[in-house]
Image (cartoon, rainbow, N blue to C red):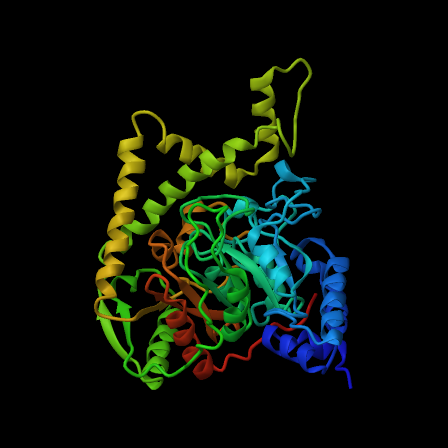
Amino acid sequence: MPKTANKLTNLGVKDIRDGVAGGDFTAREVAEAFNAAVAEAAALNAFIITTPDHALAAADAVDAKRAKGEDLGKMGGVPIGMKDLFATRGVQTTAASHILEGFTPQYESTVSQNLWDAGAGMLGKLNLDQFAMGSSNETSYFGNVNSPWRKEGSNAAMSPGGSSGGSSAAVAARIAPAATGTDTGGSIRQPAAFAGITGIKPTYGRCSRWGVVAFASSLDQAGPMARTVEDCAIMLEAMAGFDPKDATSLKMDVPAWEAGLSADLKDKRIGIPREYRMEGTDEEILKSWEQGKEWLRDAGAEIVDVSLPHTKYALPAYYIVAPAEASSNLARYDGVRYGLRDLPDGAGLQDMYAATRAEGFGDEVKRRILIGTYVLSAGFYDAYYNQAQKVRTLVSRDFAEAFGQCDAILAPTTPTASFPLGSLNDDPLTMYLNDVFAVPASLAGLPAMSVPATVNADGLPLGLQIVGKPFDEQGVLNAGLAIQQRANFTAKPEKWW
């Protein structure tokens, strides 16, 4: 007996995949249910464009394979949201910027192709902070994403986090069972924490960057966002893999993360970095961190103190390195080859460049291009960029030394819960502080995951972060699973959209 559409949208990746394979329902029924949920949720503004036909076509292909008794793939029958930073053949790809509005790639990103090959379908392209620059999903040319969560007793619109805010909102609102995200300095983990879902940034190089609109090439990494650790493991297995088209891609086999999942942490040591007890961190976040330690102890782990002495320099270093790489990467948007072209009357080439970039880029993108161009300019390169790269090396070394004493690190994901949209717009520095716990793992290229832990007094979700050794996604997923099983986080946003 097929489940009702409402029941189908409550299922995650594993349950959909196994249900389709087992004949409990068809992939088409799943796609139709999620397409309808997406259409009803326009008030969230989570999608820039929807692609219901893509989802249905992929579902029909899976159902046809099942009828023939063929393998359905790791993601067989699962429709997902695709962050609009991944190039999708024949489907507009904008990076949420006016400068790319109407750009339709003639190629597919490696990560999205891997997912389609694994049997997934696309519900649409998800909204994000413009060029992935932001922590609140308020810099998109296509408008803010609204979090499905509200403070108890308030109707104020809340931030879904950023830059993958469309992804976190869609998964939390049950209008997509999972979504792709990208993480440069916390853009998977911070929105996952704000929205009460799970998200993992794998080791740098684990997922190909080919066909992903670049922000900061030495930091950008794609990863899955879903409701459970198991779902993230399944999706990451489908996304990851060596890609000769990406020079930074890891030439390593993809481990069987799903099969290797275990919440038994006996003989594991979990490090607690003393430098992460920062001023201004919300009391309820610190309380959930203490609770996280108890959960991991209960799973058999030993809790040890570790030191990451260069933590306080990580955020300033990040906000030099990332804008520097952004100013270089975004030089290609000049109005000549693709995207927006603003050509004032009688304008020469330089005027066209200036007009196009002034018109096409949002304020936050311009801010970061200006910072990046400044720190790379003659006379400042050594003082800023080279110094920041040295700090980055020290941050990496801190982690390497800490991992001599422990197998993984437990920390908060964010210093606060979600905040109301608009509340930090005049204060970019406070906005940047959202990433204070997330950035160090990005600078060091380490796998790191956010798992929902609890809700605060306002009824908003709080996340805990696990950071692992290079290439040890399994250890991160397992510690995440141990927390998930003990936290038993079942809170979900009440539908207002």
